[in-house]
Length: 121
Ligand code: THU
Image (cartoon, rainbow, N blue to C red; front, side, top):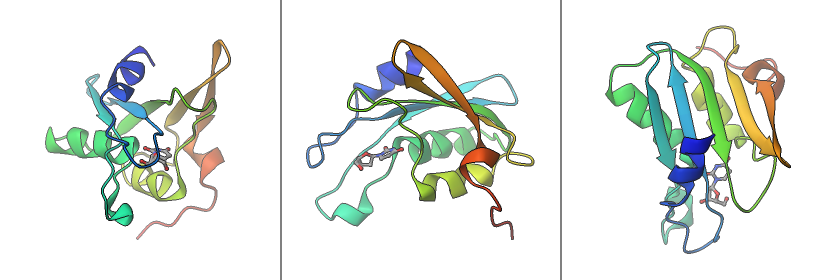
């Protein structure tokens, strides 16, 4: 979560002013961070979770154990629907932990809780 807080400081969010940082713990034990970056063509915006996923994949990771997500704008900042599906691709049985900040503490979901009956090709 500390690394996600740091990542959120580099978010490029001039349109929504909603900054997000995300860090993935991969099965290797390595951590990959990302922030959201927006675009004047709004639909081109990339969420922090997908940015972090891209970094992990670039370094050869294929299984994720956990992701921590932080926004200074909102507690309980769980991933959007699209990002839930993207994360689903890189874990087994949707058993990855999704960790968010709530108040002074952390809340831990499993991806299975956030994306029931997920689609697998
Ligand atoms: N956003 C994320 O980066 N992750 C989320 O989980 C929710 C939304 C970004 C996308 C956009 O830049 C801004 O937050 C507002 O939707």
